[in-house]
Structure formats: structure tokens, C-alpha cells
Length: 209
Image (cartoon, rainbow, N blue to C red; front, side, top):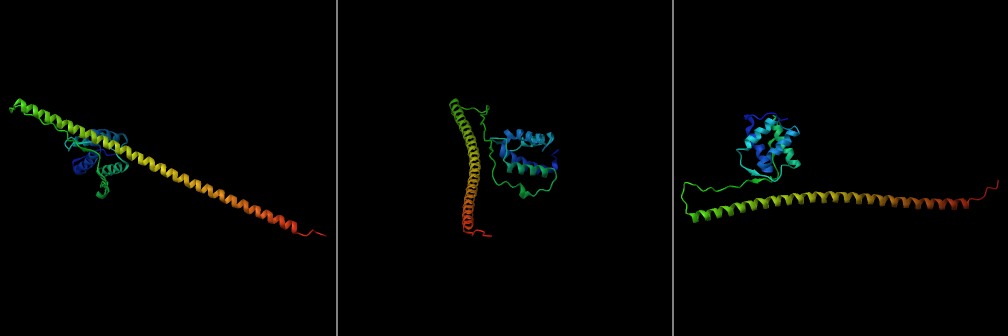
């Protein structure tokens, strides 16, 4: 278990944190860290330290708290490295990008100390509202696209499994047919041997002694 995070490993901590944030985002990071605590990978103290650092990092928004098997493997290597184990940096390279995206929700504030004509103020408020609606629509569309991609990947895995099972079934059928064919050939040979034995028996002269 990773018990403590100290200032001597801040660079590794931030690299691991960036790796996680780019996949689950700030919104799902607490749940992922709670999972790591529940399975004994990190302590309460280490989880708190990660959340503390995350509060000052670039904001990301994720669609899920779960990681793939390969991502979990890399995350585990980061933990081992933070525990003091020698881990090659090449083993921490990520071959694919994360699904989380920068949290681009920003609000434009009107300074109350500056005078603005009511008509101009209304126009600006309309533009701000449209901008927020557009951003929200884009985020929703991204989440829907990622969810659809997840469903398609799951369907691909199901089809690959079905294909593998069908291949095994075809192989079993082929073996069964071959066994049947061999049994038929054995029976034919047995019949031939039986016929020859009968002919030989009939052709043998009687014993006259």
C-alpha cells in the first residue's frame, strides 16, 4: 500500500495525477481514489494528498471513473514508483489518449464598476447566454459520443467472442465428422475381413482323418 506522499516525489505525483485526470476528470477522481483505497493500493493520507494537488491542476471533466485494464496497469506502476520501486519511464508511456476533456465552462462577468448602456448590456447578456448554451450542448454531445463509442467497443468485444465460439464449434463439428468418417472406414474394413474369412473358411478342404 502507498502510505504517504512526500515532497521528494512531487514530480511523479503530478505525472500520475495528470494521467488520471486525463482519463476520469476532476469530477470522477474522488471515486477512483476511493476504489484504490478499498482494494488496498493507497492510504487515506495518499488519497487526500492527490485531491489536494488536483485542486490546483488544470480542470478536466470525465465521463466515467473506471479505467481500462491497460490504464490500471500503468496506474499501478505509478504507485509502485511512488513507493520507491525502480520503474522504467518507458513502461509509463501511454499509447492512447484519455477520454476526459478540459473543463471549458467559463462565465464572463460584467464589472459593476463600469458603466454600460442598458441596450449594450442586454446584447452582451444574450451573447453570454448563447455561448453558455453552445458550450453545454458541445459537452453533452461529447459525452453522448463517448458513451456511443463505449457501446460500440462493447459490441465489438461481444462479436469477437461470438466469432471465437463459432470457430470452436466449427472445429468440434469437423473433428466429429472426421471421427464418423474413420468409424465408417473401420466398419468397411471389418466387413471386408469378415467376407474374406468366410471365403477362406468355405474354401478349406474337409479334414478326412
